Image 1 (cartoon, rainbow, N blue to C red):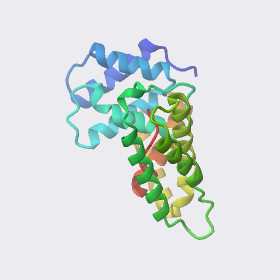
Image 2 (cartoon, rainbow, N blue to C red):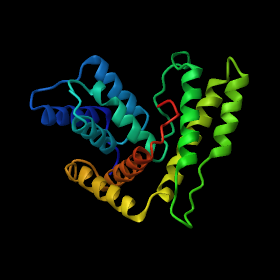
Image 3 (tube, one colour):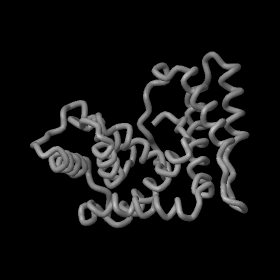
Image 4 (tube, helix red, strand yellow):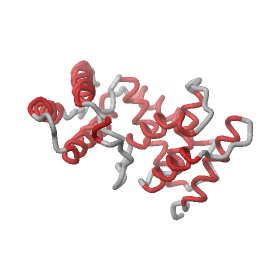
Length: 216
């Protein structure tokens, strides 16, 4: 099944907001722009719907799509990277904030205790290289820096499943299966499988306290 066009994509989001809120809901111009940016960036519809569910289940007072942004974009970043990702302008992201995220990620990766014999290989060297780059560059090449940060997040996501016990991994996969089930029939099976994989990876990162460092 081909991905939905932008109108179908937006209508599905509006329908899900109506169902979850219990009131009629039409996307505001700001929310429409956000949905269109996700569509253009290749974020699967199933990922958006499951991310919205996570926002509601977190107890957030969700009154617009913008309230779901964090959860949707964390899921979108958890799995295979689309060719494009929405990103804020570089001047809106202070280097000190990036440095802090990298330091936290490095520290928490160092405290992970993977099962014996696992293939857990986090990108420690790559993190240190980016830390060094930021420390000596007051005006870094933002395109290069974004790409390196995305590589770090992709590498961490690829490694994180090896840091979990089999029981934890099974728990997250079962949780992911329940999360996607309510959307079965609305989106194709490939999109549901993709959303399930992203959900599992994101829950693994949350369990281990591994922050994202890329600009989504």
